[in-house]
Length: 251
Image (cartoon, rainbow, N blue to C red; front, side):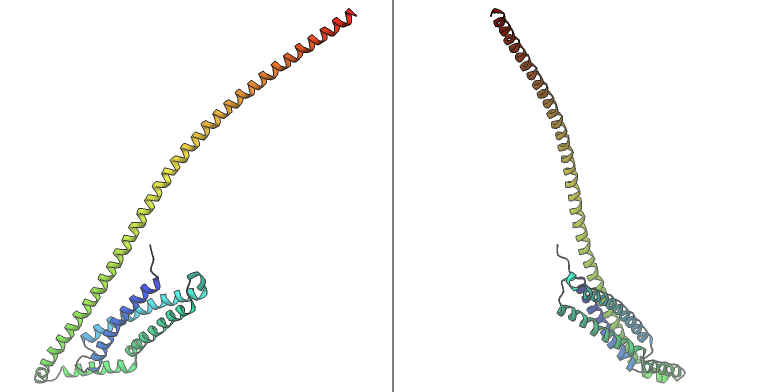
């Protein structure tokens, strides 16, 4: 089973998040430049979404940066050459610069002054005549439709990301299931081998006992054989002595 490099998984997620953030940033810029929508409800919503997206990307980039530093400390362990490390470092650096540009623009003094000025004009315009309000009613309706379309498109993109994450989690779950199955099979094989080893140990004990019994019988047989030889030698010696004594007496 092949395992994908975690760097590429996080990099793809960061790339997709950055793409969504750039779309949000473009819409945020349009709302900021429009006196009718700057500081309005949609502007606040887009600003909040953009800030959260930028913050999430920055956290992922910190994780990637930490992994790159670990590889740089011991490149031989991770089997990565200098060119690949430079490519990864360049991706993190360029993405950080892009995200930092968005964040700095949102937090700039000029942006805050423009939003404050737009809100002040809205408050002043609220006390005007109803004729001025009806003059821009059609424009407001058009902007509302455009804003609604943008929100729906962004929600669809978020749903697609959620579906993709669910698919990845399903794949991870399937991999875990395969590993669990393999672990159970290995456990069963180990139990069978343990039973076989126990049976082999019993067989060895029985064989050892039989060998010991045979050795005892052989030892007794050898002792009996030695006693018979000794008796034969004694009898022969007695006969020889008797012959010598007879011969000596006869002479």
